[in-house]
Length: 171
Length: 171
DNA sequence: AGGGTGAGGTTGAAGTCTCAAGTACTGCCG
DNA sequence: CGGCAGTACTTGAGACTTCAACCTCACCCT
Image (cartoon, rainbow over all chains, first blue to last red; front, side, top):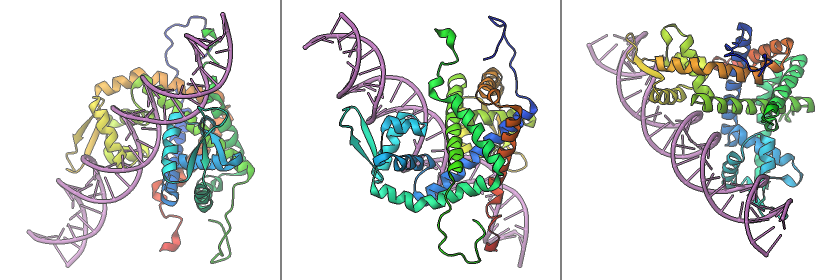
């Protein structure tokens, strides 16, 4: 985790400073409240949680409104299992349809239906407004830029690919 | 949501700009990945999800290691119902104990047990390390400060108290 | 061709969260 | 005092998530 003289001794934990703790606490609070807020907003107005809404958006943005399951999972940063359950639910709503992949018999496409697209069209403005009101309206341009950069850095550091990229000593 | 001439017309939605979209996307990705990362880390090392760990921390920080249920819920930014279930589970683990409030017979204290404190003592260093590695080690001091301020602003805007504070026209 | 390895995706059970409803008590007002 | 409105907390059912199998098919190697 950090440069210690080769084969380090018991290493007493390095705590967060008071300031770091304050930052971290604020982060947790903001994220918890925001997730909650958006989940409720969307559950009320669109009948689905935020993650599911995000899936529809990804599909809507994709060519032919479809994406392979694994692709969609990767975009949305969720596990394939979670996606599988989610798509099952969205399929019951008639908002998504599964389609076999012709070139790979194991593959499945998730396809946004017209009905699904319609839900999106109807509910997107409200959702955008909620995001605006909770986030963008409150931040200066400089803060918005900063937020973007910070989140990019954090996300990048956690990309599944790095799952050992920092453990070179494991061969 | 924004200044329109009194009694606005149908109001076409105000979308996010490209840059705002990028910021928002990064935010979602970072938050999703981080939550996931920490949940797994704690599930593996401490046998509980991140939220539950947070509850133990709040209790540990409180005088006499106890907090009224409602207080705890408020601190942790979760509903009382959720807390109730959570404490039930933590109680099964022997990490928390409920105690009646003498001055209000409806009230309950959640109390951190010695065993619970011990779990915390054992697992906190690993958790702090994970947070450090995922967040603080990657951000400059200026970015850390900025993050703190941004998150404070967002959290403040969503504090349950504001549940109508911005709808003065509803009397 | 045959067999191994592993990728793509699903499944079921156990855990967690939400929502609406319920119980028990407090505080207040007449 | 008696009631009644609101506070504190819990409960149960249904929705969602996780984890560890599991199945099918693709690819590669001999």
